Length: 66
Image (cartoon, rainbow, N blue to C red; front, side, top):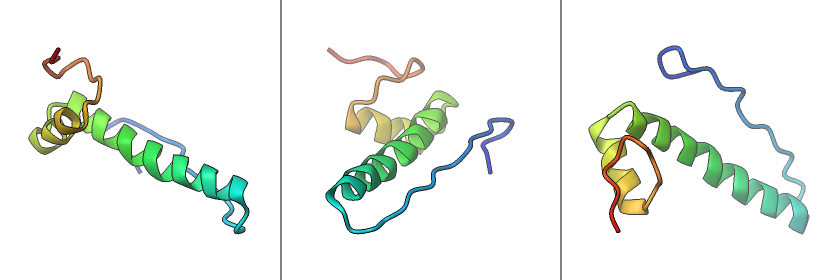
């Protein structure tokens, strides 16, 4: 799956109930979707730009606020 010609490897994680797996799961379920929003925002999709600005993402294509 990808966006246009963008290719990604995807994420795989084992959820076994340990605290270590819980931390890894939280990171993967935060980082992977966030990267998708940033890629879409950089491609100038309006909804992704809005979400990225709301969440304070540092995306080059977005106007930066101080």
